[in-house]
Image 1 (tube, helix red, strand yellow):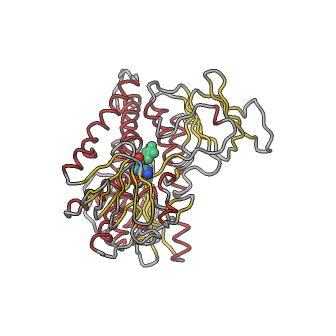
Image 2 (spheres, helix red, strand yellow):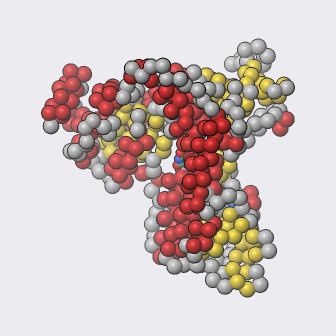
Image 3 (cartoon, protein in one colour):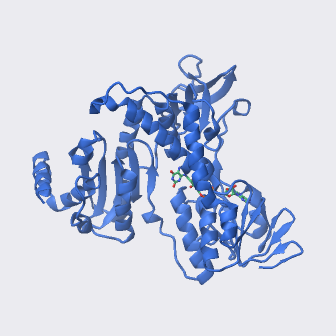
Amino acid sequence: MTQDNGELTPDICVIGAGPGGLAAAAAAAAMGVPVVLIEKARMGGRSLNSGSVPSKALLAAAQHADVVRSGARFGIKNVRSGVDFSAVNAHVRSAIEVIAPQDSAERFAGLGVRVVAGTARFKDASTVAVGDLTVKARRFIIATGSSSVVPAIAGLNETPYLTPETIFDLTDCPRHLIVIGAGRIGLELAQTFRRLGSDVTVLEAAVPLKREDPECAQIVLDALTRDGVRLRTGVQIVQVRRILARIQVVIAKPDGAVSDGEATIEGSHLLLTAGRRPNVDDLDLDAAGIRHGPNGIVVNKRLRTTNKKVYAIGDAVGGAAKFTHVANHHAGLVVRNALFRHPVAIDHHAMPRITFTDPELARVGLLEDEARGRAGAIRILRWPYRENDRAVTAAATDGHIKVITDRRGDILGVTIVGMAASENITAWVLAIGQKLNIGAIAGLVVPYPTYAEVGKRAAITYFMRGLTTARVRRIIGWLRRLG
Ligand SMILES: Cc1cc2nc3c(=O)[nH]c(=O)nc-3n(C[C@H](O)[C@H](O)[C@H](O)COP(=O)(O)OP(=O)(O)OC[C@H]3O[C@@H](n4cnc5c(N)ncnc54)[C@H](O)[C@@H]3O)c2cc1C
């Protein structure tokens, strides 16, 4: 790579150092290819600094608080439960600090990547400017991620609010957190703060967890309600306002009338989790002929944009599920496409989606309605956690697995709601990715006692049509334990 008069000419220029951009830069550098990586804020992106890592560290603290509180049912008594929020914060910070060196500019410089701090902007179809520097690369990879949508609500400009970008900077636990938006991020944070001691109210205009299987999502919603999260759906927000240290959210009553009485919800903090929008405003995509819309950058199956030199990956891509593992997967595909002209196409079908609530909700492949639309006649196989010995021993019997196959037993979609669902979905990601038949899962040797057994049990029911009474299931379970 040459630098002449402030111009860099690498093979690959990656814009954004979140999980997608970092994975792409590391993979290209590992091939010995000159790479420039441009980041305008913190290395590690959303995932490390205000996404997966802090949210899962906070969630782990909340789960510990819950375990302590619920110890009595296991015979563990007189354990004092108290939450020291500054110590919880220290745990969250330390999780970020432990992982940060992996994503640091120093580490990437050591891998041979030229890291440039600044905001990237396209000057034309093959040039990006960062401050005084210009980059003319053979290929560009846009990995600029996404940010929280700030909905148009009257009074929001004058009312303090939090977003997932700022909530991990709180130094005190909110007394009453009002969450607007009941998607997976909103509900994860709602349960987390409830278990850390906040009162929590969630307001949702439409359907909570609307991208998930409704019957499985309901099990999560019931668990949140049992935890004490107040969930109000079908809510139309009229206005928000601040009155001294209090936040008020005024909601329209079903007939459209606005009242200050019970239609005003009062809390101490407001959190917006009403969706994510792609970070493209800084990029001047039009200057490079790159098509984009409100949902993100338009790409083809190989993640190539309307400018042949430019690829887009991760949260910035229109229609892509917004997960760290998706950004990572995109990075691998794009590097193969860009460097080796190895035409690999994205397969969104085998992309897992996880909601890290308790119980967890994990899904891969088609939902029931989608499967009916595509395959016509389908089979639905279920197995409940209450008939899983490991779940019984852990008193974690909430939930079930739901497997959808076509008539021949080819696996079309799977949702698991229950303990360890995020781990157990991986076998099904493989099954769907490899287009396996349900017989492959029914024939697996699954260690006993594990939560993963619910998958095998559900698979066996495919071959037991008509033999689905509880008694028969108990006999099958008994035979299984005998080996
Ligand atoms: C609260 C929360 C919890 C989450 N939990 C999970 C989880 O448990 N599991 C999971 O898989 N996903 C989770 N996610 C989603 C996950 O964080 C994102 O999907 C992931 O970070 C997307 O990676 P990315 O590389 O596309 O973008 P990002 O991580 O957003 O990184 C993009 C980077 O690009 C930089 N950038 C933007 N514009 C420019 C520019 N013009 N020039 C230079 N740099 C630029 C940004 O500063 C940023 O650092 C969570 C998200 C949130 C908000």
